[in-house]
Length: 169
Image (cartoon, rainbow, N blue to C red):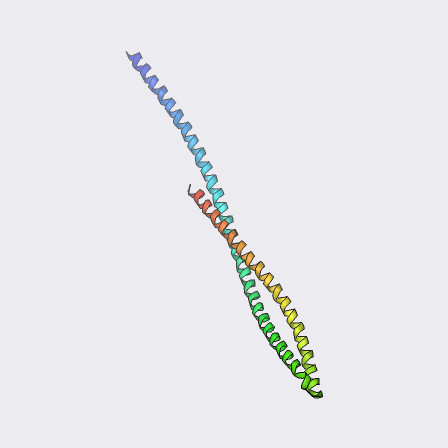
């Protein structure tokens, strides 16, 4: 009877050892998973930091693009004003040219001077038109760069949200 009890106790101890081995294996597995999760969280945190740095960089680029755009718009306004002035001067020259047929020699000399000035203005007008075209092209490039920066900023924000979700896991 004592041997039977001893045998039962041995079996209980053996079962307890098996349970302990199972628990130890489960603990080891849980520790491995926890380390893997820590590594993922660390990688996600680094990704989030990199994304934040990209956001800061793109924000700076966007700010510079806006400043360039404002400067170009200022130049465009100035060139437009010059173009209007040159156009008015050209119209004045054309009106004076019509009156030239009835003018005296002195008037003809004055008109010749006005014609020279108008021709110079026409040259300036052509140059201003060329410069305005250049500014319009640069303005289009600046706007495109701004749109690209906005799209990249949205991508970076999305990556940041993904990283935040990975960190929470």
